[in-house]
Image (cartoon, rainbow, N blue to C red; front, side, top):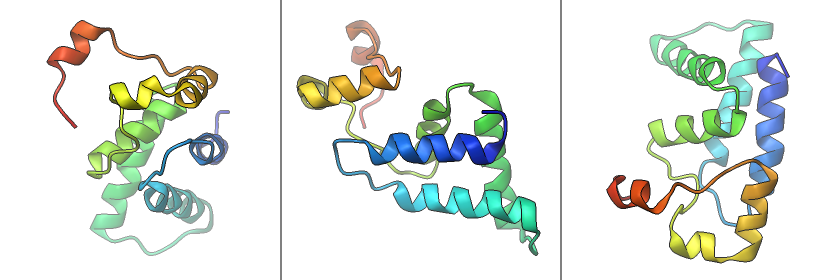
Length: 116
């Protein structure tokens, strides 16, 4: 998984499996469109270049594509899913998180993290 396209495809599969509604799928589709424009060329505006660079930095910074997607969605002002006690109390959500390597923060870190 060394190309942006493969990472984005992996993230799409992962996000489609989310057992809760996700409002960030539009943002993910924009990411795919952005990746396509890298290959086929397009006329870029300052806004689209900034958008592309944000995605590239996220993908390059994190080996875990899930973390890159979540970070990107949060920067866009989108909460990818409710990471709260209610979400974690559901067995299907915990199983999904375990399958994708997502770990819950320890209680002392949750206590001091900003509210979503």
